Structure formats: structure tokens, C-alpha cells
Length: 158
Image (cartoon, rainbow, N blue to C red; front, side, top):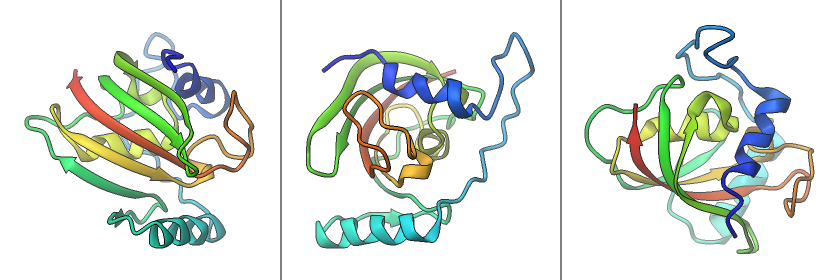
């Protein structure tokens, strides 16, 4: 299902942490939003019950790096070109795209925090609690308060 980033860009209207470059200079500091403990607990339960091997991040998400990539890692102000698949915890794919470019600062907080963990050529799976994804907002096949799983290949960053 290609929606060419509609899902990821939708949250930019709701909770963008940086204004677009033509309005305000981008601040490259990664957001410091932390998920509530109840969401972290629910995500950990999903990770454990599914037998997933993933690292916990202090902000409340989990991740698994399949390939670290090489070169300079992106900052919040980078444009990133990615291949990705977004799934619900029941395995349903709600979005995917190939070779699509975004301003990292325009994406959901979980991507803003997770993608800079890898460099171009890298691959990562992000396990995001609702507050670092779409929160209480139901959106095109994503129920409100959903844990989301994104598999992301970072093609390039500039």
C-alpha cells in the first residue's frame, strides 16, 4: 500500500517540532519527548511476548538495527530518503513506500529519534509507543493509541 508518506506527514500538522526551513531555521536538537510509563509497559509486553530482540531507548521506544550504514548520520534538519513499511502489531501493513524523501523534522517523533541511530545504507526496525507515533489520533487504518512497527532502510541523508 503506497500512500507516499501521507501517514508520516500528517502528524507534522499536529505536532511538528520544527517549523519548515523557509519559516524558521531548523534546530537540529532531537526532541526529548518521553513516552508515558503505561505506553512503555505495553510496548515492552509486546516485545517480550513476541520474542523480539530489540534495544530499549530511554525515551520509551525500542529498536533493532539490522545494518548500521556508513558515513554521517542524519540530524533533525536532514532530508532523508528511505524505503519503509509500517505495520500494526497484528502484522497488518498500513503504509509503505520506496525511495521517498522527507525532511526528518516533518515526521513523527519516533522517526525523528530513531532514524539518526543509523547512517545511509543502514536498516532499522522501530517499535513505537503511541505518543511517539500518532497518539490518540485514529488515522487511515491506524487505530488510536496504536503501537507501530516501522522497518526503515535509510538510502541517503543530506
